[in-house]
Image (cartoon, rainbow, N blue to C red):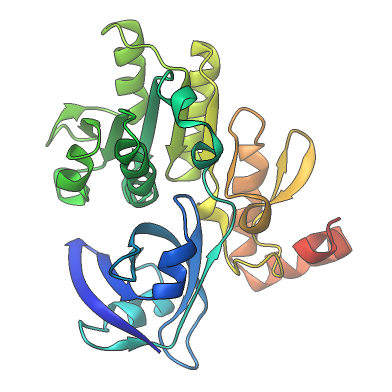
Amino acid sequence: MFKILEARTLANNIFLMDIEAPRVAKHCLPGQFVIVRSHEDGERIPLTICDYDREKGSVTIVVQIIGAGTLRLSKLTTGEYLHDFVGPLGQPSELTKEPIEELKKKKIVFVAGGLGTAPVYPQAKWLHEHGVTCDVIIGAKTKDLIILEKEMESVSNLFLTTDDGSYGRSGMVTKVLEDLVTNEGHSYDLCITIGPMIMMKFVCLLTKKLEIPTVVSMNPVMVDGTGMCGGCRLMVGGEVKFACVDGPEFDGHAVDFDQAMKRSAMYRTEEGRRFLEEKEGKAHHGECAG
């Protein structure tokens, strides 16, 4: 059992939990995720790590209510317990593997959409702690859906935008990125984008035109989180990859977003899953993909 040290609402249908999990906190790095079960009979939910405190022994997750499992999770309060909290899973951000002195020479921009702000934060914080300053663009439909603003301001140069112009700049994240590069004198050696797949697709189309190498985090396609279910199967540079075991980070200019979005939509229905299993055979599952 894993104690909930804090549970609070961030925005409509979005909540934060700080979980007592010393062993996970000791080993996790930015970019990785955990599998959570709220109750013994609960759904296994893959969630990206938003923050961690090794001394305190805690890990922070941010969750959007999108189904019965996340709704049930949202009803737990401070002082109660999660049944399972497994991790860290997945590969850590490539940033954590680079020499710090090389990172300091790079100009890095993060582009986050909606809930994608949560997995961007630990990467920006990790860079800040190692003396590397980055730019962060956060986009949301309205002001009320922007999360972790103060936290992000403390670790980055922050640019906010809303689709309806209710806060910060007005327009999509792609407009802000293009304005920064073409009109405001910014240049970038690397872009890291996390958010809805359709957003990441258009960010990658723009960065390809701007000739900025781009990394995407494919955590939106995860279902099982262990490579068993096949829900996160995608094509990267013509090769089959599984976001939960090979990623979640990939070269954004090599990801087939159209195929990934089509497959994700099919995976939401029982008939769609049966069709994919029949069509793909053993390659449907990560454990058999090699």
